[in-house]
Length: 162
Image 1: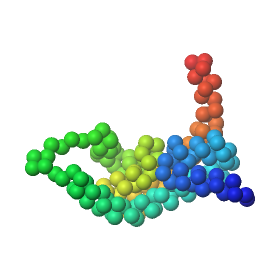
Image 2: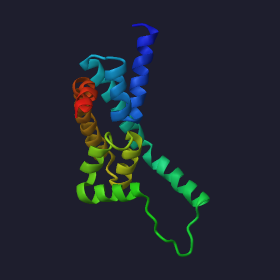
Image 3: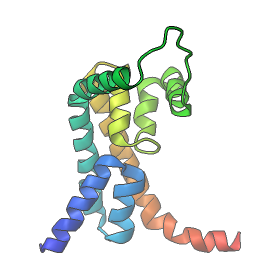
Image 4: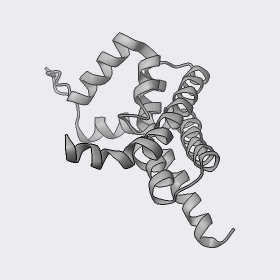
């Protein structure tokens, strides 16, 4: 293994840890042309590592975030609740599908660190959150590998004639 291959593995691992479905997996499949086992192993390892790290540091991060918000944006006497579209989406997912929904949508829509922090904030059982997230990451990994390896190369041709 030369330095270039090691660099490719590190980049794919780190991208998978942050932006799974639109970062690590497409780079592994489309750019670096990793074979199936190598792509699945490295991208899943990046995602799982990120989930474990962010689930375990979530209390510290959320505490720092809360202190920052209180310092920079103190609450008013008559606070009007204004929800960003993301918070409305997360509330809807949490109420309708629960932890299953957060785990399902995290690799697809959210980044893994943000999805993990939200899941741990809403559901305080870290082991359960980690388990659901790992299952979701592995399932999405297989889907994304298949999509980027077999379907994505044919999309421009299909869209050209559509």
